[in-house]
Image (cartoon, rainbow, N blue to C red; front, side, top):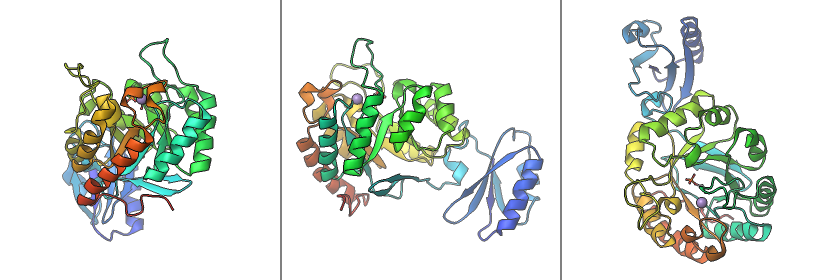
Length: 351
Ligand code: PEP
Ligand code: MN
């Protein structure tokens, strides 16, 4: 249930009402929107009568039920307003959200060595990317495939961050690693294979770094939003949703089916920022540009693109990785689409 306060409601009245709601056994969460303050109520509200709530304060404009099973993640929980995720990077703050320019995250699938990660950082930054991605801990289908360099790769990401000023996005696979990963990462990634690892979601929700939650390979939109709800319910409001393709019947030509319809669907259901990953979504470098452009046209808030200095030698996901040159050309094309939908930063290339 949400309690929408009237414009100009005095702070002391919001505070008093929150106390009263607490005394009724509810846990009100104050959400300050652009125009209004909303008190979100999660808990057992099924038997409560919204009309009775209306009586609690003359400053209440409306009391509404959130019908979906995902409460905090629902668009209604913020009374229709989009949320933004603000990430501090050495280069400055980067904002993810519906009312901000498209944020571009680029880098290799895995961090392989210092030379390649630092070179990639410089190259993607020069092309206008805002974040460097790269896995230290890799979830691989085969136990015999390269598993990532682990902690030593985190040190290389820290180095790349220092020399480029780019924010870092990297995956946490296991709860005990959260702390070391969070020391380096500006955003913690939960991968598709862990989307429903509920104990990991609870722990990641209990720490402060923003979270990038990738869609599970066979997750419905509702499964995905319920996974986001775990993180929000554990106290971390900074969640970005990343569509990365789902398993369908046809894997002959593309690795996954990139579900671009998820963009407008999510927009209507949730206030959380949206990212699209056409690299894992298609599995082939040749298909990445078209899907990246389409994602911007369809309204994504952010893109994740795999870039490797030498894709044919990559230790993971080479076939879907762009070279830095190809990435640079793509960024020029994305600028055209981004400008046409008014979502491209005028200062994308860092000073
Ligand atoms: C990745 O981002 O490198 C990755 C493993 O992605 P996903 O979890 O979407 O497969
Ligand atoms: Mn990858």
